[in-house]
Image 1 (tube, rainbow, N blue to C red):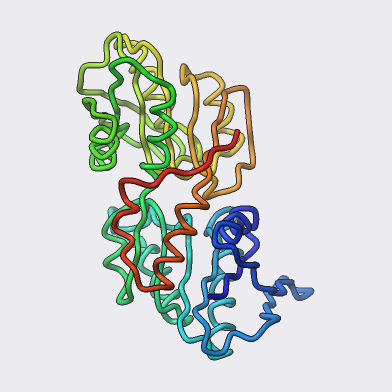
Image 2: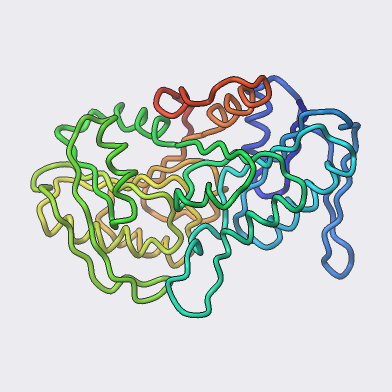
Length: 315
């Protein structure tokens, strides 16, 4: 196999290469004076199984374009198979027409990846499950829950309850609850804008119990913070937030610092740009993704990774 990394998350790519005991392939990524992306793969990939690692995160347009150009370069260099490894699939929140005259950008990104020459997609915790159906090529969709639950078990919480901050995350919450052998509570929200939640309600028994809010991503933390305040009012003993992809901005950090959330637990699918006063635990998913790459390369099943995989942690 040949592994190449874009510029969005080279640290994670390096850890994945270390797990696989291979070196990251040499690739030159630069910019023309007008800002256009230039890519040159510096080693032979003819007939090779190529994996290109890139999260579509801040700045998403730059990193998406980088990924497309890297795929095109590998295809034109006669790679046998090209797998786009996206620890975070950007533009996933635009997955349906919920208002007149809006795009379905998640589908557009899928079309672009296939048109560029990707033969397979490996990704983790998509914002919406149906995005897998936007592709006419195989998609391996991994879950970070086994990795994050392993850390939660070390906290030895007494009679916790898993909370989905919105109805869209119920399936994820059920998965966490099954692995932790506990109950769930469900939140309902009205979103006023992209960065503001106007009202929330939570259905479920949280009084006197540690509450574990689970979500796939957050940027402004408005949903998490509003839900945490409501959980506190309902008598939750302590509140934790578990989010796979944290692309938190300065506004989100300020909100989290004022919230009753005791700890934010996440993965390194996206580099953490901002930290505040709230403790943030980052758990690496490099081993999970690396093992998936190994199995894809050797045509083995990745199903067993969904429940049993445990990974290394870092603070």
